[in-house]
Length: 115
Length: 113
Image (spheres, rainbow over the protein chains, first blue to last red):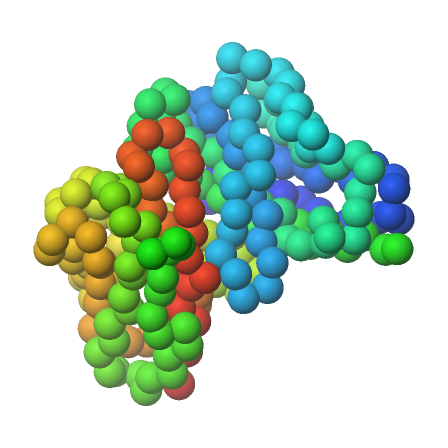
């Protein structure tokens, strides 16, 4: 069973516009959520995270929103840049915020930002 | 080293053979993780080490898979009697053990023919 789902395999946006990547989860025990970015032939790199006690976390051009009642989170990138083109993974943990960090990942969304 | 190093970067093996995949974590990182990423999927947890011991191996798919970290640094993932379904990118990550500050390596792409 897929506990973390990214239902959009791909997303294409124009440079300067907003990119919105979505993620849904089913496990109510998840309490910490992360987004990773992955370029070809490289490992995933950490982008931004959010604890379940918050509903928004912002870091520069990146903002993550969490809707616990809907078990949904989203990543907003504003403004989008061509260098943001990559695969984006949503990940979740049920560790209570102090666990060793075992993560459950979604399938990924390929973001393409056109100049 | 500056990052997590995984060797080899690519490995092609015949069905039924034994393979070893190596991970060199960031110096001083006590926590080490192995994940597997199949085509079109996200990384899937395999095993976690804290120091020399495997604290959680619940993600290993079956007893053909085994991992060690004898001195609390380098780790080796071992796969016996490889099957075509084992073909994937095997990712290693390390951290200080606090929170989720993973650093992933670039992975080993394993192809079983």
